[in-house]
Length: 86
Picture 1 (cartoon, helix red, strand yellow):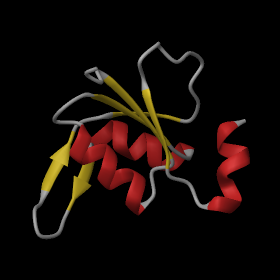
Picture 2 (cartoon, one colour):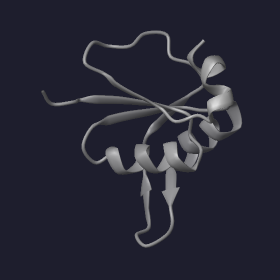
Picture 3 (cartoon, rainbow, N blue to C red):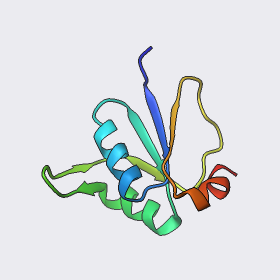
Picture 4 (cartoon, rainbow, N blue to C red):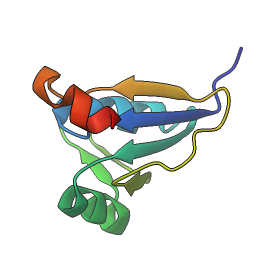
């Protein structure tokens, strides 16, 4: 089964990297805190390191509906998991 849509909950270092890398293979959205979501929507998600690129992905602070077949990655810190899912 091919995955067409990915939602990454938590846009810290790990979540952001997963979102950026997956964005070339699927429609990706990150769920992040307001300031970070706004910055991603304005300028994309910049990856700098061994490889550097700017991923143009959507960011939001909440998801109202999840389409069937969507892969959800929970990448928050353990202490934030419950609040992120709520």
